[in-house]
Amino acid sequence: MVTAGAFGADDAASAREEAARALWNDHYAPLARWCAAMVGDRDAAHDIAAEAFVRLLSKRITVHDPKGYLYVTAANLVRDRWRREQGDRKLPARLEETIPVSTPASDPRLRDLVERLPKRLRTPVLLHYYADLSVAEVAAALYKPEGTIKRMLFDARARLAGSQEAAQ
Image (cartoon, rainbow, N blue to C red; front, side):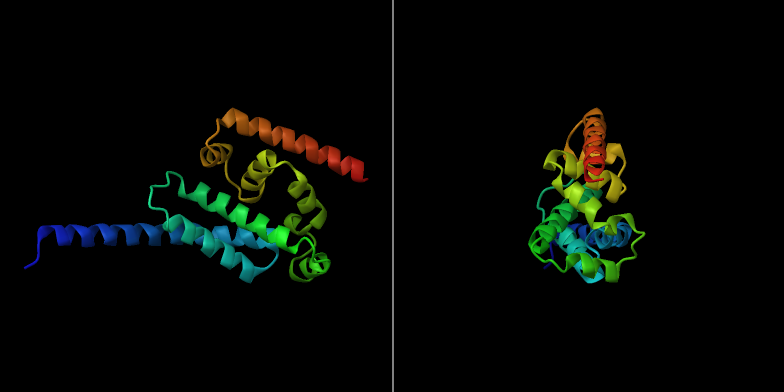
């Protein structure tokens, strides 16, 4: 004998699976491209993007802004990767071989300057300028007011401009 509750559970599981599929279809490719621009390695970028999705889908609570969650998670995974590779002196040579020099994200100096920003400024910069999230989306992802995000981006730009002038 089959109870009505059994059908409800199947419908809920089917709805969750369909929502996950739609989320994947909408956000995976742009997220993977963004990660590729950040790390300079397509295979690693796909691994990072997939890991961000795994972490999102493993959440037992509802994530109100899945796109923001994905990009923040991917940014953290990218940062972890950069830290692991920081001791690798061959990284700039590998990046030059895999990514055209004209791509702004492949400039190791700019990436290094962004990486040196304090975390409170670095995360909004990565989300806004590299992940192409709007100020409103960054604010929602970081649970901060839009005005705060605008100020953080202003402060980050000022620090980056000062760092570039000092380097010249």
